[in-house]
Amino acid sequence: MINAVGRRTWLLLGAGLAAGVLLGATVPALLRSSADTSAELVIVSGVEDGEGGARQTLIDLWNRMHPDRRARIELVSGSADEQHDAMVRYAKGEEQVKADILNLDVTSIPEFAEFGYIAQWPSGSLPSRQLAELLAKPRESCFYDGRLWALPFNTDAGVLFARRGLLQPPPATTPTAFTWADIAGQRPADGSGTPKAAYAGQLDGYEGLTVNALEALWAVEREQGGSSEEQPLGVPDDPAIWTAAVDRLFGTADAARVVDPGSTAYRENETTEEFLQRRLVFMRNWPVAFRALVEGSDQRATVAAADIVMTPLPGPAVLGGQNLAVVSGSTRGDDARELITFLAGEPSQRVLMQVGGYAAATGATYDRPEIKAAHPYAATIRAAIENSRQRPQTPYYPRFSEEVRQLVTEIRNSGGKQVPPDLRQRLTDAAQGRLQPR
Image (cartoon, rainbow, N blue to C red):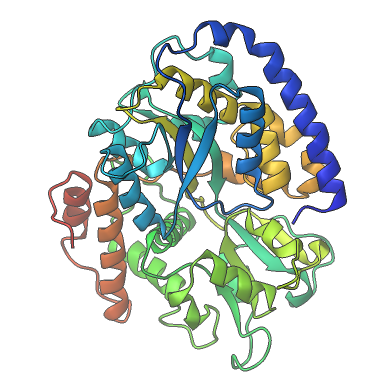
């Protein structure tokens, strides 16, 4: 729900955006595809997880300004893994609706490029200025094998949330960072009161578990003075780091309820709800959760913004976000690329962040007064993105992610003490496509 101030801001943003597009529309119109434009451009995307329908707002604006090249969003639901499978079907033309653009998770670009599902961005067709506007990490996620395949719709990076009123002892000033020791130092007595635990992440058996596991591995590794960032997979293979990370994730050796036991069934929404209800002191989540917490509806309460502290994670965050790519079989490639350029531009990124709470992929957006007003932690979000790390860029990422989760489960089931001796080989084989799906 957008409040009155937000609605007025959007009207101003929309007017400025419309003017900018109109001024820049003449030349692109001359380069328009000669293909049939009677049908709508179709963007296949997961269900919007931001607030205020920001993505649809941008599509509505595009349609008002391009009535002969209208677009619409075809939504697919489900987890990140289920959405990935749906995207593959659309890319292969196996769905009744024919897609022109896919809104892909950043990890899917290598796979969809390698197997010919998406079209390479033609050399010289994108102004260098547009790429230069992007933050470095989101820009890197659009390339594979040295070639450009997509542009960001939005970016993302994990952050740490804390309830100021639950911190013990109460902080004299707003904390700018927490260590894992700070988190573990918040010790609810027996889990029967509020809060019931110090911390929760997303540990259900989906991509969220992989993300949380990688962040725990990188954090432990950094604390021990190491770095696997330049290694082929970018993941440590030291058994001691894995056991420490699994213990951190699940609290396998924890008798003080640092980690919420219920988080093994949590995804993003469940973690947000527990945090909202003051059952957690800290949570790991994506920045968009801030808007979900402070903007209420008739069905849910809110958290006062002043009671939320957002900081970077104790270690590197996983780079998230979605990138827009043209389907290889689309007959509307030129029109689709123009629409993607519009959606990835700074004015559109501003709307996505201001209205929807998404993390913008363009650096200048974070310096805008209206963004700083709507997002007290804009600088924190930008810092998290700039210090984030990509998951391995492999065409077989889904299988790699599955193997990470399997290894975490095996270590946890051993009481957090036994690491499979073939861990390194299994991760390598999964990343290189040598393992069959489980």
